[in-house]
Image: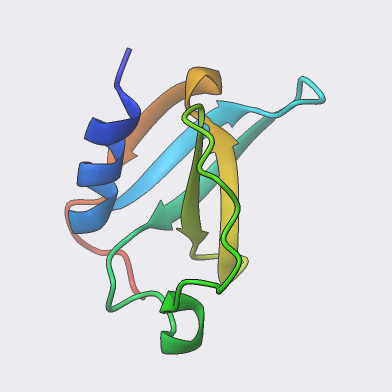
Amino acid sequence: MITKEKLKQLLQKNVLEIKFKKIDGSERIMNCSLIQEIIPISENKTPKKAKPENENVLAVWDLEKDAFRSFRVDSLIGYSVFKEGYEL
């Protein structure tokens, strides 16, 4: 199983397609990243009252929803790295 830190490192350099199980039991596929150039400047700022970080949850930029979304790392089913061809 991949660690949260390793996944975060991959997302800071790549666009990933991840598949995970949602809390309701359904599965979701999401194209996401943490590349700073992808995240709009207005979303890139840290909020003044940031919630304490949950060690089991990772927030990522969802490229289809154009917003931050989060998922539990232990619910990850699989992932793949877009090597090329993903248009931002």
